[in-house]
Image 1 (cartoon, rainbow, N blue to C red):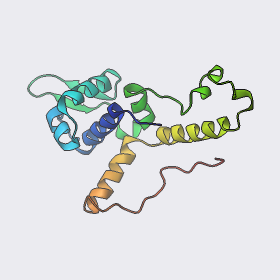
Image 2 (image 1 turned 60 degrees about the vertical axis):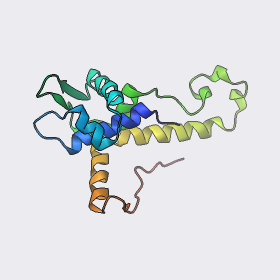
Image 3 (image 1 turned 90 degrees about the vertical axis):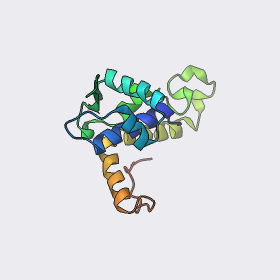
Length: 157
């Protein structure tokens, strides 16, 4: 599975909004600078996030962007759904007519299990989780990575 750049930028922008939230909207230029996202591209991403109800945008001199939901209410699967195509790893999982080997394919169930594990992680990981990780990384000096703990444990795989 490849994560589209729009999704990567969207997640980075949402994390930035969550980290720098207060009662005033945050300008796109600030988000772009801190999250290393080209501002014209960020404008498109923010527009889509606003249209899908993940952020709220205010126009004008005092305008900017803010989260419309609590960070804990924004799973990565929701970000993927509004900014990128959610596709299975192999086409035959969605359409069994794509492959002549489907009735007796030994691989298909393995790919389905992997696919389900990925989507389970995307469903259970929120912007709040990533904000927490960002704070731990920052507390460790930014470059030093904390001991990696699994995001989710997938049983039966």
